[in-house]
Image (tube, rainbow, N blue to C red; front, top):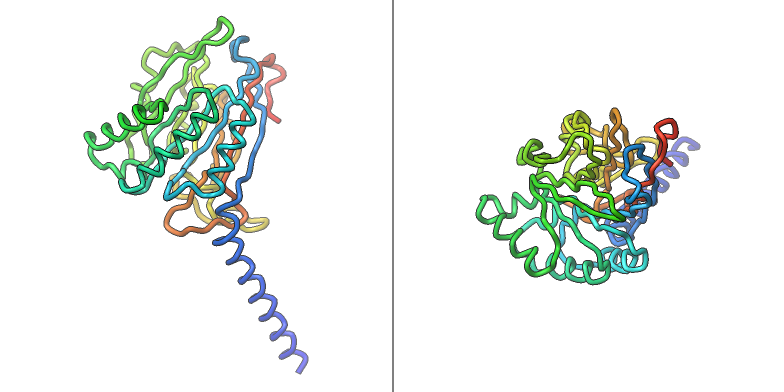
Length: 290
């Protein structure tokens, strides 16, 4: 009798947990923005860029501008970053482009700083030919004022110094061309690299100019469990680079958990993420992060 009571109680407890997890994962967390803040200390940072503040979003998967996206716009408007970086997967299908245009237009108006976008694998799924994705990027830039970098780079200037901003095309589907992305970038330079997925992290760590790399794609696993973390990440590295700050050699890598969802509209213990990264200069013997 006692065993039957125990089993019944365990069944009730499990059912309660499952119900709560369902409500949280499908109805609450996908609409609740999490804001992460960190400082990265870099010994090679030009003095003019000391204190550079970057806002990073990733994996928008924009079906519509929901509460989390509106909150991100408001927070970025209040925080006054120096640069906004969006690391891929803006849309899943061509019919979602109007929502994306609306969001990026509002975001750029609120940020009042350059907004840089790199492509992700879902962008290539939505626009599978060179002509179609080129036309989409051209429309994005014309209608929102964002800058798309796909295997390209540009020079940023601040307080008399310069650094390079490098943007790769999507590495998950094999569109990234690192030689083209770094063309003209001196090995001695400080390059902030935007890429969609961790797939090229080890290759980027071999590039002397690549000092800080921002990526997404993983969604942080989208579903995480206590003490376990991400259950699955679509990456050749598995869950190794699921979410957060990493260091390979002299290069720092940050993986953002993304804003949207794919396949299933669920997030559990993994809210949509907006990240503010402040880059600070330091002596080589002070090199660390906090």
